[in-house]
Amino acid sequence: MRLLAALLLLTLAAHARPPNVIFILTDDQGWGDAKFAGHPYVKTPNLDRLVKEGTWFRQFYVAATVCSPSRTAFMTGRTPARFGIHGHFATHDQNAARSMPDWLDADVTTLPDLLKKAGYATAHFGKWHLGNGDGAPAPEAYGIDVSKTVNSNGPSLGDEGKEPYFRAKSTALMVDETIKFARTNKDRPFYVNLWTLVPHALLKPTPEQLAVYADLKPDANDPAFAGWTRDYYAKAKDLRSQMQVFCASLTDLDTQVGRLLDALDELGLTNDTLIFFSSDNGPEDYRINNAANAGVGSAGPLRARKRSMHEGGTRTFGLVRWPGKVPAGRVEESAVVGGVDFLPTVAALAGVEVPAGLGLEGEDLSALWKGAPVSPRRTSLHWEWISGVQGPEDGYMPPPVCVRDGDWKLFINHAGGAAQLYNIPKDPGERQDVATANPEVVKSLTEKALAWVKSLPPSPARDKFVQSGTPSKAGKKTSTKPKKQLDRPAIFTSWDKDKDGFLSKDEFIPHMADQADAPARFVRFDQDKDGRLSKEEFVKAGGK
Image (cartoon, rainbow, N blue to C red; front, side, top):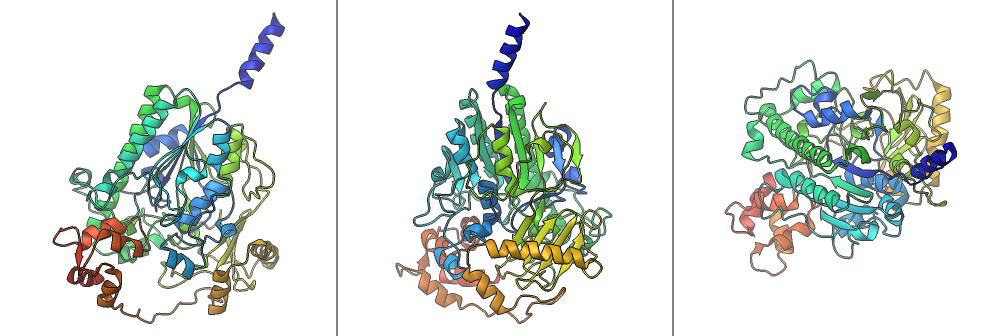
């Protein structure tokens, strides 16, 4: 009898349901942009609930400083430099000018590919930004069964050009689709990418969302803003209204996450569902053209922001909730976890074998996620920033190659010089460069970083970046020459393909570098709201 009972238990264990997985990836949410993370104003009760009911990995790093390469690493378990993706996907001409492909190669094995082959239903709702435009594969080419997206060639989530509050309502649309998908597939394991549009610029909350913060009066000298961030907010323009817009947008995102959690409860799927929550990179800079309101996001005590390999650009939330499997209320301070670890870790938790030969650069950290003691990483985390786009620290850019190994983080240039070294647990704000005092650490990590760069495919963009002269020592300033003024009348004429004296949305959008924002920008420029841009409207918009 005991033998039969033991066999039954073994049989049940062997057929235990693998977890559903919902990956919530926000856009430009900083490491300090939540109540649980110390933000002095924003209300995020549902994100706070995820922390209370799950584990927060406080040293979680994405693999890039901007969106498309960061997303590439989550999907593939490899650094984006392997695919020549070092910036955001834009128009084909702009991609070619930066020696980038036009999309992530659809032949590359992705996490949805692996899960789908193992019997998972797979979906992607929200931002894609892994390639769109002429010839780009739809999300379904990457192992996705069902999608409704922005920035892709797949089925659309909606038309931002027709709905002025589309971005403000977009998270609710994504959650609607996710709940519908979960209900349809509640009797089988499922995987969902829920990748939001907010808090990426341009933010425009509805009046109802904004009313929550009608009485907000932020103070740049608030004790919650310390070090680098306090200096930053002191320079922000119109901090009150911008912070109201930003907080309103984030709180609606939080509200929609709450709707999703409630729906999982109602469907009886909470204990069967692993939720992972992160952001694609650090917070935007208010000095970027269209980003004044999104630009007041917080990196907390961390240095710098989006487009920087300092902590504020690459360190984001790593929240994991899986009731009964992942420890609740755990705040893990010392484990170093990366976006490249996501694929091997989720595959292991799902019981899915990862084929040999994929060249994964991440590690299976499933035991750590489930509460095992922290052990040293077997592999280092690596970054390269060769976009040439100025970082947000008054023209300063760190050297373009970076490695995180143990407690140490090293920056160097491609020749191995210009070293900057930081002990991150002791100095998360990266205020003290200790390279001179630790020559052996610099030597060891320089060898690792250069070996990684040498292993990457050749890149004309890298060659061009090196030849043009990267900062050779800490604190060197980039050029401060004024930008050349664009000849907007001539640009208008060249874009007006049908020569009718107006730009249609179809003529305007393909020329925009950030096509997620392009429809909203078109609406903003269209002052008389006739659905087209006159030359006068287009030229006048050059000052915005």
